[in-house]
Amino acid sequence: MIPVAFDYVRAGSADEALAALGEHGDEAKLMAGGHSLLPMMKLRLAYPSVVVDIGRLNDLSYVNDGGDHIAIGALTRHRDVETNDLVQEHAPLLAHATSHVGDPQVRHRGTLGGSLAHADAAADHPSVLLAMGGSVVARSAAGGERVIDAADLFAGFLESSLEPTEMITEIRIPKHTGEGWNFQKFNRRAQDWAIVGVSAQRTNGSAKVALVNMAPTPIRATAVEEALTGGATAAEAAEQAATGMQPSSDLNAGVDYRSHLARVLTRRALQEAGIE
Amino acid sequence: MEITVEVNGASHSADVEPRTLLVHFIRDTVGLTGTNIGCDTSSCGACTLHLNGEAVKSCTMLAVQADGQAVTTIEGLADGEQMHPMQEAFMNCHALQCGYCTPGMVMASVSLLDENPNPTETEVRVGLEGNLCRCTGYHNIVKAVLSASGGGK
Image (cartoon, rainbow over all chains, first blue to last red; front, side):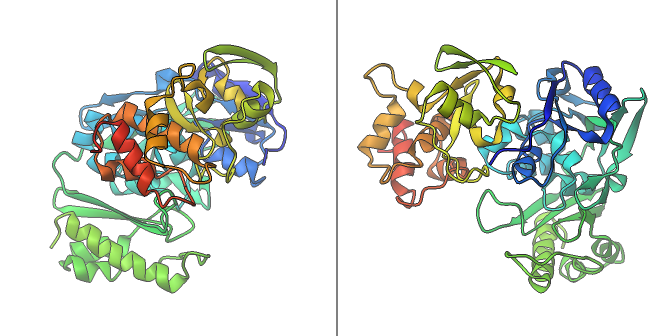
């Protein structure tokens, strides 16, 4: 399988990438590691007329200590995220979940920024960003820059709130040093997407919970969080995991089974995160 | 687009369409057919080769992405007649039957030991999660990797 023919632009800098986006608008797609975009192009589910290769922007591959948060360059590859000391110490949920993305070959190429921009409800990273209350920095071809909170990043099925002329340059993860966390991923083969997944992160006595593959977008389990705030036990709160969700039905699981998985995995995640 | 890729130490230049996959460039343009195409959807790992020393799936890369980079394929592992220790280990442990997954499996295994020279059995199994084998049941592959690491006795 090969993609539909396209024009290839190799960006030597973020400025060049943004200039190409400014010129071609929504005809163009950014390609970082290419491990979400290229499979879609091969299946002809995506057919951009211009591919802007940002895979060589090494100045956007970094992990920095930002004081109260960890700042991660958008082009940082999964392998470099999962093995980074700062990430392991201050954002262990991110490090752990990253080690479960795809397989080692995929993690050598795929990037954190690319994964988030792809906005796939079945992907692991969006749930981590939601549960950890992270944000992304987006630069615009017009010259501006804005910070988009995780809560505002995922707009629809495979759709982020990024404009066609914006690119993610940095991901910011609030430090959660020493706080309880857990990640659950249920799938049939090791390298598959989660049939259902759960990210749970404790923060100063409260907890955020986000679900993988339980709605058209990555989504917070607000009913679970509210139950916990109201004094419910982990087991009681987890019963609300499918409340308000719109899981899909596919070869792997129907709606009922996905809802069941969400409840069971959320209970495990909460209890493993240290919530009674 | 004109690209130059270093393959197994030798420079190869060609004019390729941007949509050319790296695996097709390696097999059809460079002429090295040891790298197999299996699923063509980055699941099976048969097309695994090394890009700048790291295992990647060449069905999920464009040849233009490898422009100016160094690729090692299964043909580049041996030193003349002297097999790479991982190839020896696969032979000694009978870690293959039909052999289709073997080039990718060996390349993934070499990359695995580069990153973790003394893995446990579990780490080998997890580390090879990106490569599917439909013959062996994986048991002898895991043995071979452990033996190449010096961990399998």
